[in-house]
Amino acid sequence: MKTTMELLKARDLHEKEFHQAVQEVVETVQPVMDRNPQYRQNAVLERIIEPERVIMFRVPWMDDQGQVHVNRGFRIEMNSAIGPYKGGLRFHPSVNLSILKFLAFEQVFKNALTTLSMGGGKGGSDFDPKGKSDNEVMRFCQSFMAELFRHIGPDTDVPAGDIGVGAREIGYLFGMYKKLRNEFTGVLTGKSLGWGGSLIRPEATGYGSVYFAAEMLATRNENLEGKICLVSGTGNVAQFTTEKILELGGKVVTLSDSTGYIYDEEGIDAGKLAFVKRLKNIQRGRIKEYTEKYVKSVYKEVEPEQEYNPLWNHKADCAFPSATENEINPKDALNLINNGVNLVCEGANMPSTPEAINVFVDKKILYAPGKASNAGGVAVSGLEMAQNSMRLNWPAEEVDRRLKMIMKNIHQTCLDAAADYNEPGNYMAGANIAGFSKVVNAMLDQGLV
Ligand code: NDP
Ligand code: 2IT
Image (tube, rainbow, N blue to C red; front, side, top):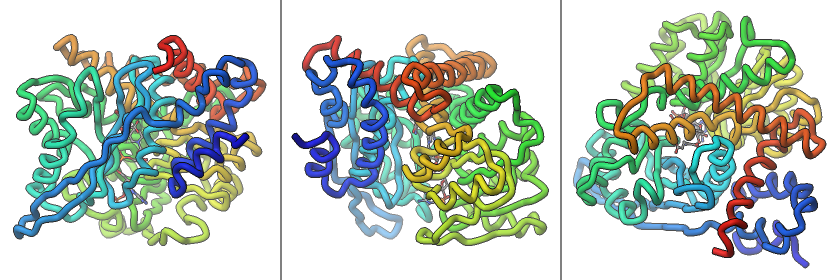
């Protein structure tokens, strides 16, 4: 009989990122399958790797010169066993079915770990917001929503941001949804504060990731005070990861974007971070400009096909990959360890390749998989939905307190599940096992649907 992976690869031949995400889960949940014979009888693995629904659509839009362009839009409604589909939208030229299916698949387990009632989904487009005017972005978002609106809703499917989709895009998407449906509901999260957003949602993924790292360090009686940290990315997750590391006494020496990275041996302090936020969020500039202002720092370009990424080859204690998938290969993993890093906390989704993860697990460093450590973003999205339903807003302290509690809880859940299956300290195994168990049990309760 063909294995689950053989069947998947035969059916979705070219979806290599999706294969990668599924393979990790299929391997780590084998002991769970063995302990629960009813799971095989009910084909839970085969069911959980098949999206409940895949929506693909044309997105035509007009640029400022009157030229028409066509992009492709997607929404993967992966699993609704424990709540409405929930997950971000990514606008990036690399977006395709494989990438969105991997992200939707990871989202199912991540959302389960938050303990909130959210199923898993993901969507987006191969549209590139870089270099586009606000009006072009608005017209694109409106065209995208002119199709997506019929598939989503506050109790059905609730999108949010991801790479290339921030407050500006969520605003344009929401405006079009509201016009088409003639209703004001919490159909998107990551909304601006003045019209339904939650305090701490912009900060949540980065803050949550650092809270998770602090929990991991505490198991070894350590904390972030004085720790040198490598952070990749300069977007939403990287910015607020840096902010929280600074608050907890750590020192961040790197940041990157898709063309290269900066290394600042003196550390990126609060003033420098404020510059980066302005540069990326308002001027939409490149991180290279950092070195023009802070002349003691250095900038290096990074080619996608380079043997290793020099960002991960600096003396440090902790690493927070917060840009994109597969940004740490096994050579990078070894470089990290040889440079003294003993904690890797993933802010991005699937930033480490399977071979890199093997290095971390073999060397027994503190390694947090994104589906656990970056769950703070979607968790506060869940809190935004709760606040929208109640038609009131919690103060920042209340949301932050809940976020901290959720991250602490996810950390413990991972450790408990890993220990239960004889993998003590293996957060990757723990996250997969705990997320999987919760979702498949709900699926079984609800019958064959
Ligand atoms: P942003 O769009 O705000 O920032 C993305 C950052 O990553 C930018 O610095 C971007 O550089 C860089 N980047 C994007 N693509 C690539 C690439 N192919 N190679 C190298 N660098 C790249 O996105 P977010 O910060 O929101 O997302 C970052 C990661 O975190 C993603 O993996 C996302 O899925 C994950 N995530 C996000 C959550 C959220 O709430 N936003 C929640 C959980 C996970 P440039 O400026 O050049 O494009
Ligand atoms: O990957 C993720 O968890 C996100 N991009 C956030 C999803 C959400 O619904 O807030």
